[in-house]
Amino acid sequence: MKEKYQILARRYRPQSFKEVIGQDSIVKTIKNSILYKRIAHAYLFSGTRGTGKTTLARLFAKALNCKNLKEETEPCNVCGSCTEIATSRSLDVIEIDGASNRGIDDIRQINDTIGYSPSGKYKIYIIDEVHMLTKEAFNALLKTLEEPPENIKFFFATTEPQKVLPTIISRCQRFELKRISNELIIDKLSAISKDLEREIEKDALYQISNFSEGSLRDAQSLLDQLFCYSDGKITLEYVNNALGFIDPDFFFELDSQISKANTSFAFDFVNKIHSLGKDLSYIIEELIEHFKNLLILKFNAKASKFLSEAILKKYVLSSALYQEEELFYILDTLTQATILHKNYFKKIHLETVMLKIIKSKNVLSLDILVKRLIELEKSLQSNQISNIEKKEPPQKNEFFQKQEPSKNEIDLQKVNFNLEETKKSISKDQSHYDTLVRFAQVELDAINKT
Image (tube, rainbow, N blue to C red; front, side):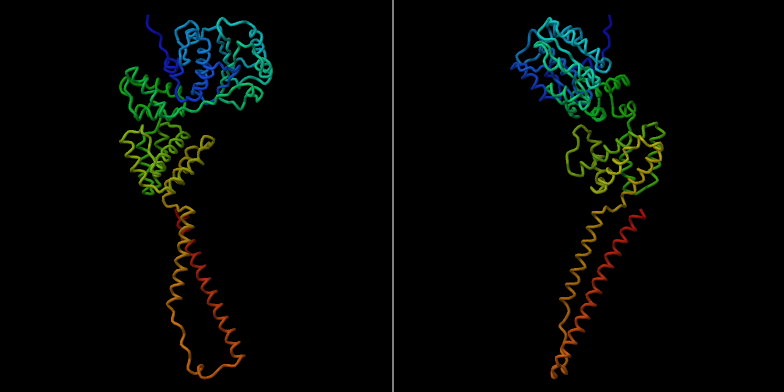
């Protein structure tokens, strides 16, 4: 009989704690609680999709009821309890979908069956998506959750812990699962590909892991889809075609056109994406990822080691075309454009965004403008000081050397002298101010023209 096909996410689901990736601290806490017999009556596993919430709950239940627990508190996966839990046939481990069993009557059924003794060590209720329970259902669970029988355990899993009542959370030990890093996802996908004897490029693995956003299950589902797309080697081109991604070379061409300030390329860029049937909203995310990589290289940081040398060289060449301020401006523009999915005129909006990005080559940031004004002011001040130092002292008239002026004449001379100096000072200040204003006006006119 031909073996029934099983999707990769289920086929390679961890069957022991050592197979869990990216959640080391949580695994260590669970194993220590089993080792030192400090097991709480309720646990809450929260985190984004595909990070291992239900998997950890099952492994915990498997280890608690395992009849031949190994030294490192790993389930044996051989005894009847382990095999029944792995195949979801155990009567002691009851999995409940909180989305479809969310009413008070469903919780009452749990309360009514709690009194029955398990066939093994513990009777465990795993409620997935527990935040979907109604307020009445939560309240019906409170008393049982606070003082359950010693052999009853509750494991809750949710992607939205903020929707769970605080009275429920306070009765649980909480584990917050983090997103799985691209590095761990790529290692896992490489191991799966090797086990299935399938060849896949490193760039293709990077693209899959980046798109999965820290979800191992999403990455495995994408890999499963790609294996159906082609029987041969999975390349980056295959990934882009199968998943609808833009060819990276198109972004590098955009970098070249930005350096040339070729505004007409904005329309060519959007038209090509539109003609390929790409999601215009998702293009913004791809652009943000592209310019983020350029900024990382600009900071002399190490680029991802999962990029091939050919792609990395292209990124290095493109990063040389930008200043840091330009990349900051572009990323800020793209971040503000993430509301594209709410816009009815997506194509026009994207064209406007691309025009701003291409014209950013001629835009002077406020920091640069202020810096130039300060430098100009310093240069003017230094020139004034040097001119004063070069002036020769005035020569006294022989006629005035012989005749001593009267007191009234001295006072009048002082007044006239002060008036002349004041006029000169005002004239210099006004000239300095006018120069700064003219310079600022020139810079602003240049910005407006771009």
